[in-house]
Image (cartoon, rainbow, N blue to C red; front, side):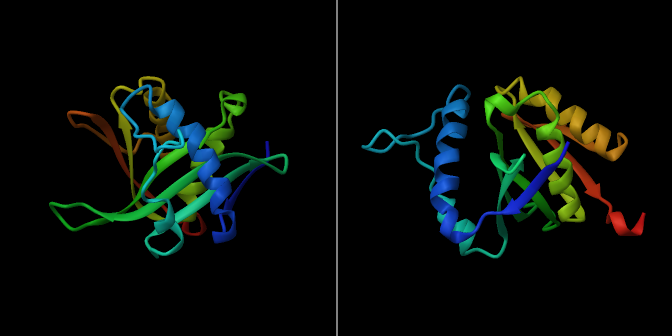
Length: 165
């Protein structure tokens, strides 16, 4: 199965915004997501992805069609200052779920950014937890640390540079 990860260009911000509407609709099942006066879900950080050098917007493509998105950011652990790549948002359209696209896209994204990674999964999003646990477990050969916070499960692992293995 061919999965393409493509950087979303600034001119494609409206496409990302449209996909975010689907994502935020799904996400509203787990937590309140504000809507504006036009009935659109709000995502206040979207514009930052084309101005902040620590943020990275991507499309997930399959068979030359956009089937999802990923928003990543370089972040710091507040207590230690240690940097890691954060899977801020990850979304695959429902019609393309459960066929390996999400797992393949996540693995491809991990490989783009060698080093420490963090993936947070809201505890209320019970369907996402087994996906991420299996995906990260398979990808790392079980070499990850999982912690639990009041509202989230957190996976931390190191992505080894593929060219050095």
